[in-house]
Image (cartoon, rainbow, N blue to C red; front, top):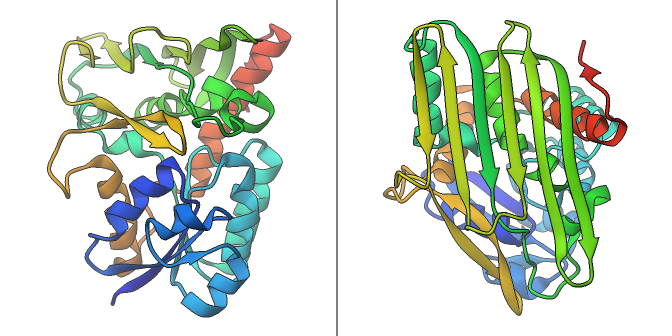
Length: 330
């Protein structure tokens, strides 16, 4: 069976997904929905309206790559239409939106997956396999960092710079680390964060956070995020246990790079990439895993419940930064 795919959003991540859908066995990109029809036309059959697209293109899969505040609208519409759904991270800006989308998908009984692509990057997937195999013994501490400059939309209104829409570096970027740490170390029980969000006419946005997580196992993780990093995109990872240590630093090794995806009249968004052959690219792999799950009638490997759990950690971190208090997750 070949699945007909409609892509919602022709921005940075929409462009990444469009390229992979076009080369995905068992899938055909039949529509791209974006109010900027010129941007949509660059990737396929353009539509400015979701309902018109639904009636004319008749997709089997709806891939939601809009800015975060619009995820709920399109996930609910796709679920009501009985379509399989792939939705990019962050899942939503609020838990109420997360819960509304989960309810819509559950009511419709449609398969759905969230785009937590870090699980498919080789250094992170490899570290997870090593932890699972007991290479560090019992994990007791972890430290991750994810640092870059503020995403630049090339003169268009920058929703990333508005924490009310994007959640800033905590929800939009180190959410990757929250999801990976939960996937690897288990459920988070306590969250404490410190951060700085500073917007001025001269320096733009400075967004930095340091978040401490405690897990049900007793392990502790420290997560650093920055959209004010002067040295370009960089990630680090350490996991220590009672029998060993795993380390990764993108500044010292080559598997993780970042390209500046340009938009409009300049600027761009740093998108982490793996310089691997087509078919091994992490973004391709996550979409392929979704297609495989549909073909096999299996639960997709990253569920919307996973997406909600990661979002909940990020929102707890934002609450802790604002209040100065530890947030306990039941």
